[in-house]
Amino acid sequence: MQALILAGGKGSRLKPYTTVLPKPLMPVGDYPILEIILRQLANCGVSEIILAIGYMGHLFQALFQDGSRYGLHIEYSFEDKPLGTAGPIALVKNKLHDDFLVMNGDLLTTLNYRHLFEYHRNMNASATIGLYKRQVKIDFGVIEQSSEGRLLRYIEKPTHDYSVSMGVNVMHKASVLPYLQSGVYLDIPDLMISLMNVGNGVYCYNEPCYWLDIGRVEDYKLATEIFESKQNEFLP
Image 1 (tube, rainbow, N blue to C red):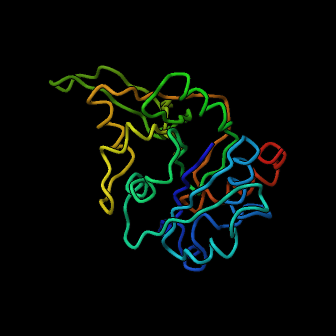
Image 2: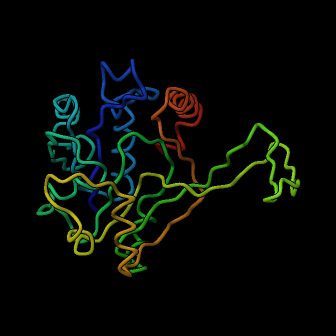
């Protein structure tokens, strides 16, 4: 299996931490979070990694080198300008397998990447989105009213359930390349909608697991606490 990892962002929501380190290199426990991801991918059968880098890209090369100490082969793709979450795919189109993982380099999860990949292949999908179920608690009384202002419902501090994208996807090369242009900005949600609109099979994958994006300071602190208390679940 092959994975393209998106690691080129500046991590502006994590400042001031990311003025010193790019977000995927932020430490979680004793490891940069990207190293945790690399070890997990290798454990799930991924052998080839392409790191899409930009901001402080030299640090990734210095730290991970060719990937051999993780049992991986790592190559690097450089962005000289922001290309979104799907745009970097076009830069490496000649290196991609028929099906490949595309994922963010700043998430903490126990997702089984092999199971996600196998589901994608079994469904003969053009693309597959890894989903995570989250609950959002509203700390107010929510009012529903009629057009005339009559009270219809009064819901005190409701909790809403959502399925959110984990930032982990599998894509079929031949299906997605027609929508990609080298050097042109494109985000994965727009790519998925374009595929869906022309009838290509875009599927969703769910499994019981833990997931957290470390993009915000409070989430980064929570990820550190959870990893340190349950490290064997993330790195068995």
